[in-house]
Image (tube, rainbow, N blue to C red):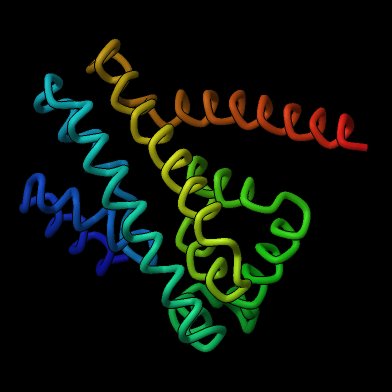
Length: 197
């Protein structure tokens, strides 16, 4: 926890560069999510909120591609090493995460990446696993950009409209909006599958 706190403070001290680095690295390694720094910077200069959201989106999607390449080149050993810190009480959390990702891929394909990129689900788990599972890179990239973009732009747009009034409850608002959008896409996906049959 102290490491994550120190990393968060380091990124914060670098301003826009820190926001870029935080978003980039978080896509394939265990550092704090960039949302906290994005919210702080939005509230400090709300006129640049959309710019900050764009920085997060580009850096995160680029970092996601790095995660994909790591998975593609180094396979499960890299995945297990990066997420070895998640193991608790003898449970192999890395294996558990990978098994869940594999199941979701089998069921939803690139939609699984979109959901991970958009929601609080650890996006980094999906970026590395995508390379290991040889997911179509173009589909992965599109899902990443859309998911990450929607997540960060929603945060910034909500803060632009409500600012200080909602900063203490921003996570709940984002989660509620995320659930609604995810529900919409799940229904759309099921409808498409029904029409194909």
